[in-house]
Length: 275
Image (cartoon, rainbow, N blue to C red; front, side, top):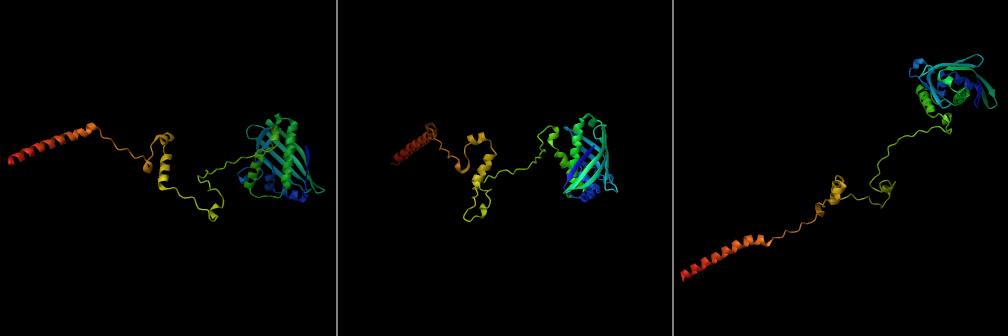
């Protein structure tokens, strides 16, 4: 395999970046470093996409500098879900060019398992694409020096894989974040910015206590009860006076009349005797 990539930075800057294992780890697309720092920054899980298929490998990578200014890259890994494996042996050469540096990769790569079942041209194209992205990142200024930053960058890169690998439109997938939307205010003027600071604009009056009580009472009742229940409180209807029937009146007038008549007869007899 042979592949060239041009970047607009000096060769010395690239040599310095390749000599820093932590910097190299941050530039490998899809690499998620192990949490164990003793294993080294170039140990972890590498997720690659080839012709719409995603394969995750667990392994290590080693970059060694030579006196002549070249670098050797050796890597091996096994499938995280399977028995397949891959091996990579590359030589990296940096050549000064007009306005930058040409990076040349030469070497061999072999694999068993799922990668061997895929189309060879698609596998080669995915390898070239990975080297292009790695070299471009290597030429960028370092953003951080922590392993956490490297893992975060690897996760973000893996989530932004190009859909074209699976036959899509070539646009990266976008992430959607759920946000909590506050409930709307019951006051139509509550959300008007700066309204409270405008002179001459009165604040909305507070509802009367009876109205607030009636509102709370109606809220706790069903719509059917509110529609059919009679109003309460000061708005309740005044009950009509109850009418008295003639029969009920005679029940207490008749005994009184009889008593008055008897009393008159007795008084008349007494007066006659005195005469």
